[in-house]
Length: 475
Image (cartoon, rainbow, N blue to C red; front, side, top):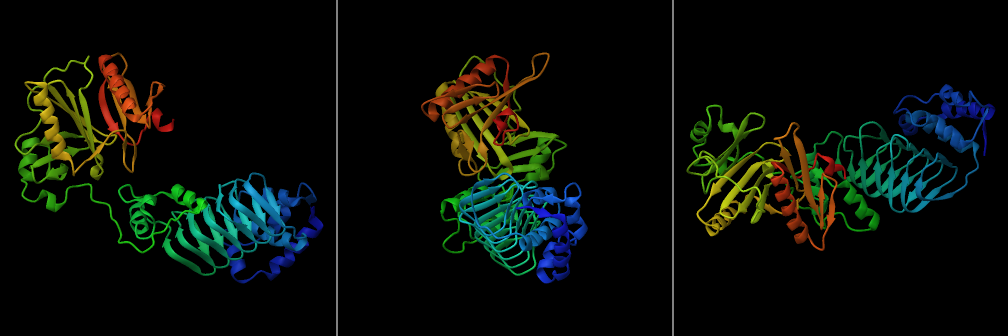
């Protein structure tokens, strides 16, 4: 099929004169349709294939390619097509198109009839401009590129807009169960029929809270303020349920700072004054009313101060620690509110505490006891003290990611850093090691050996973090 300039341009003028209503409004979303814009496609050659026309107009605003699609529909004989898997080269379907499963579009796709996808339809902007002159239907739609439907758009379960660079434009009606514009330009010149609609500019916290009323719990996280879109569309593609059977009460993120109830009865002003002349009551990041414990920390200036209800920790010189030892035991706690952590290590009769917040500052406290049994009893006491307020974790922080330990050696001419995580049954380190074991317990035991070896080499724990920022984050 070949399009000639002598036929195409006069037909474009005729089509332009007839444009009106919602179709004209949709085509004009990125600027009014222009015949000279289409004529420019033929400047280098008086003849073009439909795919060449689409490629010449994309990526770019929707008006020229949408206008060209209407012109091609009048010039080309309709021929239906079956699409499979991925559209990776510019393509024009002159009739209806159907995909029996998911369809991923990474190049311009123009369908002059209807497009039906029995699965998830995903485009990849900016290279994947999609134009459907007729009706477009799918089980789910993830769009990050320019997507134009001049008929109706009907998506059974969910539509997600991604990024704010391009647009989803519909001339007819848009019908779906869940529409999440998610900072993406969505314009419908017909009517929007959506049971659940999160509009452009919504915050992550608000989106997660609203989603908790109708999406299954594994598809949102109010603590992180996130919707798990990838999991959502994976379940849609598999035909698995994503919506709750009945509406649920909204979940909300607990505040990072202690609540008035948690602070009730505590002399916060007095505790802050005893901590430091620079400390203020607003520096409280954790409080436990039943024990009177208070943590004060100001990122970047005030180091962590822990008042255990009677005294501040760390006022006495810490006991020596034999760096050749492997830890007798390790207990790690994480608090989602404020992203605080507490790691308890025991080395025989010495107990060491690391406390801080995710990828931030940390302080280490160390205490000696008369016997290893006395130190072990202290670990049990601390476990009982923090359980409930903190989560006990091993290799990952639930709802967040792998637990990474970063260690630093400041003793040499140049500061050195290293880190490690346990990924399933594999110990992964920033030094490039990947040691696989039969079970997670064996991997955690190997982690203890690795930490002991690094400590002997002059490294100390720098920070704990659940979202790795080093090489392990991109492994």
